Length: 226
Image (cartoon, rainbow, N blue to C red; front, side, top):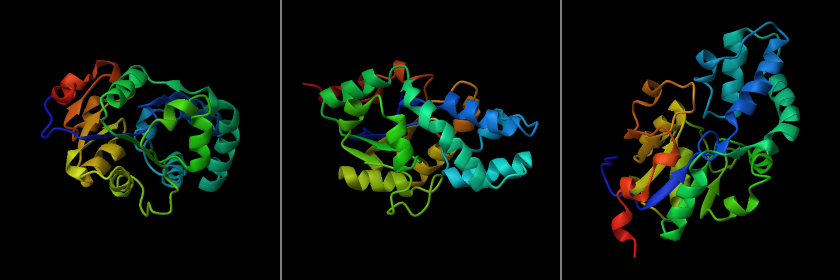
């Protein structure tokens, strides 16, 4: 894995990178749109992942020509998430990579488009794990004026870490997230969720099949290990 610079700080997207929430999103959304005879598949989902909820909802309603308002879709989705999102498990390799970064004093942050309430639901079974991150920035933080693909959330995460954006490395699974990291002047490794074509993350510095194959050596920071 050849990165243009040696990363000093690492920022993770959450959904599909740290936590396996994407299937929950898909199942709940299909339950909603299925009432209207519609299909929610990757041809639609690929344009929604990583973006602010209201932007994704507007896209869904418009693209599938749903007879409900985006706000109604979100309300129904949130109700289902109360029971479903706490079931989210860690993505393969996520715990090991985060542990290695922490063990070798490389600061880490989470930058997620999820609202604070949704973040709390998703991480309900993983409180201790997420408490170990040096910074967490959520999508409804008032300091985040624009959602992904704008760079705001990543630039805020870098400020929270006291980091130079140019030496920050982002892990993302969504095209909008890769675009946001690029716009922030950061390095980015794409980790496509199964079903998303690798070409969708073509702007990433590198694409990895899973966090399970990412090591500190491959990131170019192992030389600092004592």
